[in-house]
Amino acid sequence: MLQSGTAIGANVRKANQAESKTEFTHKMCLGLEEAAETEYWLELLREAEFLEQKEFESLHGDCEELLKLLTSIVKSSRQQT
Image (cartoon, rainbow, N blue to C red; front, side, top):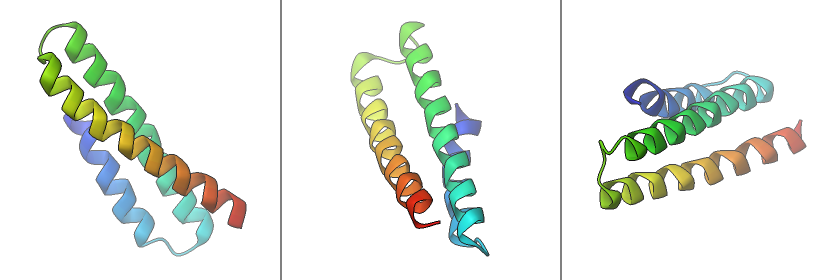
């Protein structure tokens, strides 16, 4: 989870430094994929009882917001290319 969770920000940062719209969209897609993977790991950690429900709900809520935001950015970017 640490790897996929931190890769979200790394890919967003790379996207902001992109030299083309295509590269920007690609990096944002990678960030979106990492966010989806992070959500998977959070669900697994909750099911294995490594996270309490309150901790899970907080982290999962943040992850869902990132997924929505990145999905919107990717869709908008694709429409502009």
